[in-house]
Image 1 (spheres, rainbow, N blue to C red):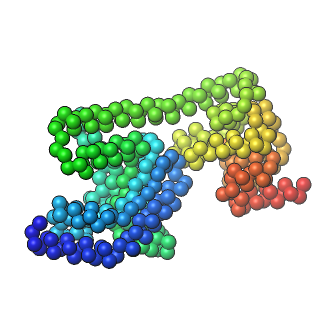
Image 2 (image 1 turned 60 degrees about the vertical axis):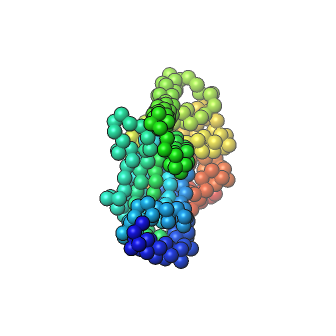
Image 3 (image 1 turned 180 degrees about the horizontal axis):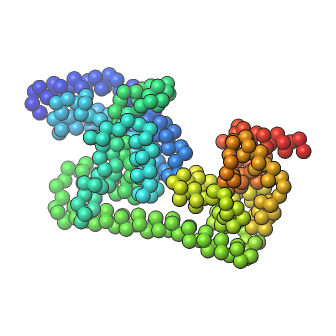
Amino acid sequence: MARTLRVTAGRFLKKFEAERPTYEKAAEQATALIKEILINSPVLIHLVTARCKGTPSLWLKLCEKRYRRPKQQVTDLVAARVITYYNDQVPLVVKALSDALEINVHKSVDKKQELATVEFGYTSVHLIARTKGGWATRPEYYDLRNKWFEIQIRSVLEHAWAEIEHEVVYKSGIKFPPLIKRRFARMAGAIEILEEEFRALRDHQDKLISAQRLRYEAGNDSMAALDSVRLIALLECERPGSLGWRAAAAKGEPFPAHIENRCVKALSHSGIRNARTLRTALRSRDLKDAEELFAREHRISDPLSHLNTARLIVLLRSPIIFGDYFPELLSDVGIERVMAKRRKK
C-alpha cells in the first residue's frame, strides 16, 4: 500500500475504533429494524442478524482494496443478514426492504445475476441501505441514522453453501486447482436442485387442499380431525364468497405465515375438532352477529376473511383460549366489542 493510502486507511481505522460503540449499537438496531420491517411479511424468515465489522477484517480490506475514499467506499461497517427458508422468497424480502429503506442501487448487487447461465456458485442479494422517512426519525434507530449498511439476503441452503465455501476456499488462502473449485460449483448446482424439490413439497399443499375440498363437497370426511388443509378446504366450501388463504396468496396479500396452524390448534382446544362441529359453528346465529359487529367496527363491507371467521369462532367459544393463541388481537377494537357483547349475554 502506498504511503498516502496507508495514512488515509490508518486515519479511517482510528476514527472507526473511536466510534465502535456507536457502530455496535447500530448493528443491534439494524437487526431490530429489519425484523420490524418484515414483521407482517408472509415470508418464512429463518434468521435476521447483524454485526459490526472487526478491526483486523477492516484493516485487511483497506489494504487489499486500496481505497482512496474509505468513508464513502466502505459500506459494510455494519452488515446484516436475512436468511429465508426458500430462495423464491428472497425477492419478496428485497422488495419489502427496498420499499422501506433508501437503497444505493449502484452499490447493491444480485450475485446470481453475475453468474453465467452455465455457472453455479455464490447466490445472494446484497443491498446497501440506510434509513429514510419515518424510520430515520425513530429514536430507537438513532445510531443507524445517516449510516449506510449492508444487508445480505439468501436462503438457508444458499447460506450453508456460502459459509462453507467462504471458510474452506476464501479464508484459507489456498489456491485450489480448477478441479476442486469445480467440485464446489457442482455442490452449488446440487443445492439449486434441492431448492426446487423443497419448493415442490411446499407447493404440494395446494393439491391437497383441492382434493380435500372435493371430499367435503361430496359429503365425506365430516368426522376426520381438522388440520391446516382441512380447515382451509372446509372454509372454501362453506364460505366461497369470502377471502380465503389461497385467494389472499393469489392477490399477493397472503395471511401471516403458519397462522392456519394456530387457528387449527385454537379451534381444537375450544372444542372444534372436525368438519361437523366447524360447520355447526359457521352456521350459528352468534357467529353471524359477531361477524357483523366486527365488520361494522372495522368498516369492512366485504364478507369477513376466512382467517377472521376462524378467530371469531374461537373467541365466541373461549376468550381465554383466544387470548392464548391470538394475544396480538386483544386490543383490537372489533374484538373488544365482540367480547363486550358476549359478556352481556
